[in-house]
Image 1 (cartoon, rainbow, N blue to C red):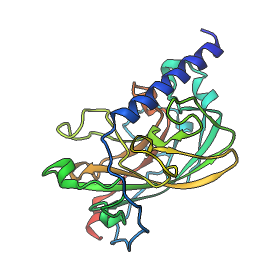
Image 2: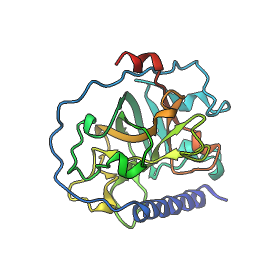
Image 3: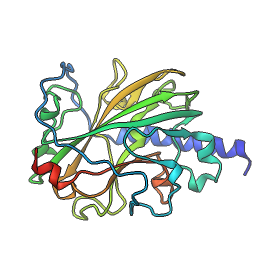
Length: 257
């Protein structure tokens, strides 16, 4: 397969992903997004050092793995260089740089300053029943070097933040299957005037830098296990763990909160 044909195939795959993601999402009730309320005391986090191995994938290219404040290049051409089976697929053509700048744990969305009338709001008891859940907020900075969004029938000029999924080493099997990549439940960079099916779309011009907050729910029993943000739409190993932003939370820090 030629490189041009490969890029075309993966662009079509990305477009299908965006449509399926949009139409398979739970409907969200819209509301006015209020200003951030005063935050409750968050739990501190520990970030793995770059040399500390993570069992999530012992064979991963260490150049494609970062921790706190370590920029990670997301180059679509580099991603495709090893073939489609090993491509993470970013839903864009070109390069961006992503940096994980912070990870915070809250007891609920309300504790993170997200009001009940926010369009992303989820009541934990209604969404997860009797499970004890924590709300994880990851702060990232995205810099668009020269990336252009792959064609999407829904929003052809936008990027999709859904490529950032939370993975947990040894996740509880009664909560999620092994190697699961947990979806985003909160995003503060939604395009203006988004419909419920467009909540994960965002604009980022070439040369522009923006900071975003991404929110995930995690079972309390999995809180202290090694975690990472896995980047890309390809859910098949090893591509699903090709690009990672790693972090972990320690019990000692949680007890001191």
